[in-house]
Structures are given as structure tokens and as C-alpha cells.
Image 1 (cartoon, rainbow, N blue to C red):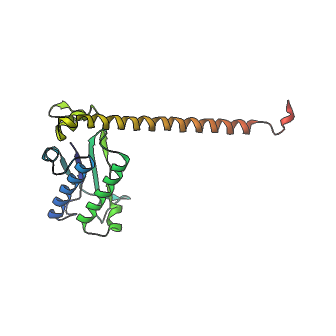
Image 2: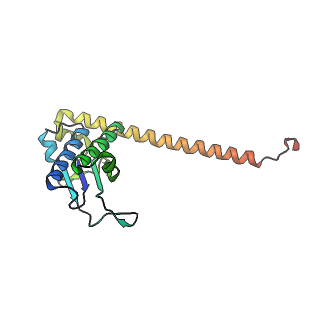
Image 3: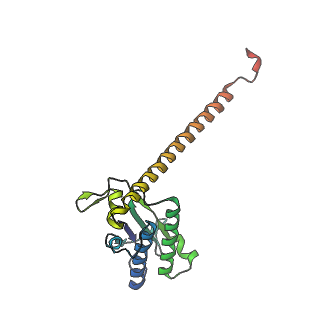
Length: 192
């Protein structure tokens, strides 16, 4: 059930190029979620919201070139580090093609922010939809376990990130304490 917020300034692309781009973004996101873009259920629940900024400013000045912001949003567990990297690259490539400019000129004006909504916070049709339920809805009931596994994998990765951050902070604290202690010692060690 991907949702894409695409911010594209009015007139940045021809209507044909924009339509192709929005369809391509949908297919990219479906594929990066692990589904076949030909899956009609996946297509039917893939939404693109097109945003038109009144203006885009860079450094306080109106930008002479269009800037693109793409925010693909999926339920928790759909992305891995590899799929996020691939998604950012594929989306950037698609925007460059739609823009028609050179990669080195257009890519610096493209921002992609893959976003996951925590399980239990994806609401649709008036109810909360959990990851295993979404997986079963799109790919079939026999695929519910894949949703469970994706969610468990993501939660393990989050736990490791949290633990690594805590360990890093503890190490820095110990090093700072040791540096402070060594600088507080008198220059003559024979003082005792």
C-alpha cells in the first residue's frame, strides 16, 4: 500500500512526461516493496499525491530551476538498506529522464525521502492495517508470513541501531571521563 507525495513545480515537466514519471514512480515503489508492478491489487492501493508549490526558494532566492521532492511512504518493514538505496537511485533516474536534462544537472535538484510508517499506525478504510494484513491483502493470504518476517526483521534492525548508539555513547563517555581524569592528575606522580 505505497503512498507517494511528489512535489513538482507547475510547468517543470510536460504533462506527458509528468504522467509517465508518476506511473514510473508507482511501479518503482511497488517493485521495491517486493511486489510485481503488474499486480492489480498493488496498483489499486498505490496512491500518488501531486503537490504544486507556489514557489521554490534556494538560499532565500526564487530558484531558476525546478526542484523535485519525492516522499515514498510504506508500512514499516518494507524497506531494507539495499532497497532504500535502490529506490533513491531509481527515483532520481526517473526524474532525470522526465526532466530531460543531464544527470549531473538534474540529480542535485532531486530529493527522495523513503519513509516507513510504524506498524499499527497505517490507517485505511476506517481501520488500522497491520503489515501482515497488508501483505496478505496485496499478495494473497499465503503471503501473510512474509509480512510478519519483514516486520520482525525491521524491528531487529531498529534494536541493533539503538544498542549500537547506546554503546557508542557509553564509549564516548568513558573516553571523556578518562581524558578528564588524566588532565586532572598533578604533573608529579610522586606526590603520594
